[in-house]
Structures are given as structure tokens and as C-alpha cells.
Length: 355
Image 1 (cartoon, rainbow, N blue to C red):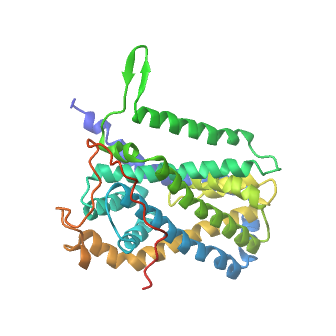
Image 2 (cartoon, rainbow, N blue to C red):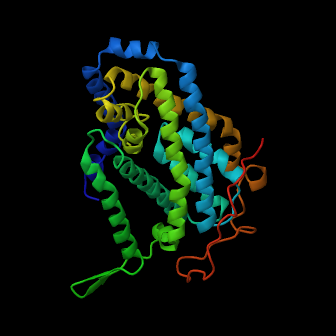
């Protein structure tokens, strides 16, 4: 390393720490320059919070449960058996940590799963990346479906997003499963462990993840449809179906603190022409804070067991399976040929622990 190179790079960690608060403040300042504070406070004061919480809190619990079921399916397909009860605590803490730092929450999840199923960190990271990309894919697809039924004026270029995304998936998967030839030279995907799940995934895996995630978005649309009535306005189901997925994607951008401001900005951008901005701002912030509170409560409730799962010595008493992998059904390594039999799908929806 050249002299002074380390000093030149010292600003990067500082910038990563300062940028999210700065972006959050800038977004909130931009919003409140357009929205009178008095109107915003009035919208909060006049809301019916009993109906609001009755719509959103049950949805938060159902979302957590179904999201964990999707994770369990993926782990079982590509790595080995793991019970739903073993995943619930770590998934809850993942939600809790994601409020502060999404990378830390994902890292804890990957570390736990790697120990639980005796798999490499990069192999598990591949599966988490697979689920994350399909999460965004299903949101964009549903946004496109919603756009087909919306009569109001919305940005029509959004209709091109699902088509472009599907095309990108076909190009990417073609690169993985054969490659492309250009000017007599063959380009194939490298044999990286980070791509393992994408190599092993079959069409039925993609279809089943998308099918399992579909109820989550539809339930979100229903929950928001009822919750926003407590703030004195309504938005059509079709319009919500077209815009809510994009609002979720914008809200997930890792550019601010606790994702504050971005979701509100997206709500106002998409629905400011049909609903007064103060009501949208009040509702979006209240909804965002409600989901954060629900995630925090779930995470804290499962924290003692999750701590034992992450740092204990025995998997059955709050730790991990042994690294030898005894008792764990392992999927073949990437270098082995794929099995000729059908993938091992669970027989049906899993029951949550009654306790």
C-alpha cells in the first residue's frame, strides 16, 4: 500500500456513518417544506387509532409467520432440514436488527443458518440473495398487474419495469446455465459458491417462492385499505396494488435511518393527487412506526431463545447442530450433478408452534 493510502480511505467509514442521518434529515425537511406542520399534527390527532392498529398489527404477525415459512422452504430445498420453530426466533431478531442495520441482521441470519445446516457462509448467502431478489421481483410483477387495472394517471413507464425485469432474469439464468457466445468466444458464469442456489434452483422453486409471497402483498393491500380509513381517506384497491409494491421497494433502500422519510415521500408522490399531503404524511409515518414497533416487539420476545440459538453449544438446548452435519440432510455440492428425482418439497403449509 502506498504511503498515505490508508489515510485517504479513512473518510469512507465516516461517510457511511454520516450519510444516512443526513439523507433522512434532508428528506424530512423536503417533505415539511411542502406539508404544513399544523395540518400534519391535526391529521394525527383526528385519526382513529383503534381501527388503525386493528388493521395493521395482526397483519404484521401474519407477515412474519408467512415470511418465515418461505425461508424454511428455501433452506430445505437447497441445504437441509430445519424446523419452522428453529427459524422463528432468528427471523424475529432479524426483523429487530434490520430496524437499525440491515446488513447486520442479514449477517446474523446467514451465520445462524450456516451453523444450523452445516453449510458454507457463501452457500447460505446465495440462498438469502436468491430470496431477496425474488422478493423484489414479485413486488415489481404485482405493481405491473395493478397498473393494468388503474384508471387514474400514474407513470406509465412503470409498466415496462416487469417486462424488463423478467428479461433480465432470463439473461442471467441463461448465463448461469450455459452461457453466451460472442464473436466466437464463450462466456460462462464462474463456479462461485455465491451463485450456488441460482445454479440449483429449478423453475418450480421460482414459481413456488413467488406463489408463497403473493398472499403477503395482497394482505398488505387489504390491511392498508382498512387502516387508511382511520385517517379519513380511501385509495382504490387497484391503485394500491399498483403503487404499494414500489413504495415498499423505495422504503427498503438503505440510504437513511430506520427507513424514515422515503416511504412517506413515495406515498405523497403516488397519491398526492387524490389525497391531501398532510393526511398521507401522517398515515405513512404512523404505519411505518407501527411496523417498526411490531418488529421490535417480536424481536425482543424471541431474543432470549435466538441468543441461545446463535451462541449456545447444543442445537437442541439453544445452540447449533454439530459441524459434522450428523442428522442433517445435505444437498449435493455444486460440482456434483443435480439429482434426477424431483426436488424435496414439503408436503404442505407448516403449522406454527402453539406455544
